[in-house]
Length: 103
Image 1 (tube, rainbow, N blue to C red):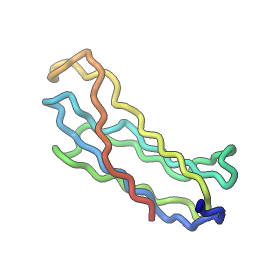
Image 2 (image 1 turned 90 degrees about the vertical axis):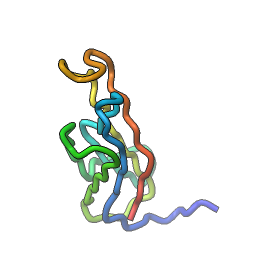
Image 3 (image 1 turned 120 degrees about the horizontal axis):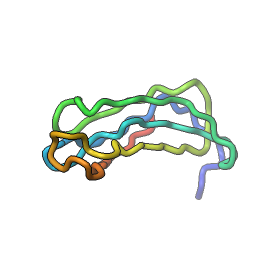
Image 4 (image 1 turned 30 degrees about the vertical axis):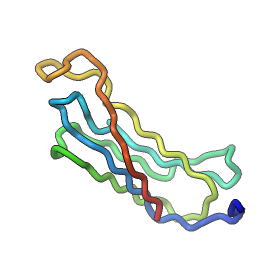
C-alpha cells in the first residue's frame, strides 16, 4: 500500500561514474525538487559538478532544506558535448548514474 504521509528527508545521495577515456562524464549539475501534492515542486538543493573529479565511481551528496515531502524529482543534467582534445571530442558525453539514496 502506498504511503500517503509526508516523510522527513535530510539528504539525497546520487552515485555516478567518470571515465572520460570512454566518453563517460559526471552530470554537469544535479537538482533535487520536492512536492507534497505531486504537481507543485520546489527546488531543495542543487550541486554543480566538475568533469575534473576523480576517475571511476563518484558520489554526490545533496543536503536538503528542512521539510517533509511525499514526492521527489531528481534532475541530472548531461555534461553535453565532449571538449576538444579529449576522446570523443565533439560528440555527446555518456551519463551513467546507478544509485540514488534518500535519507
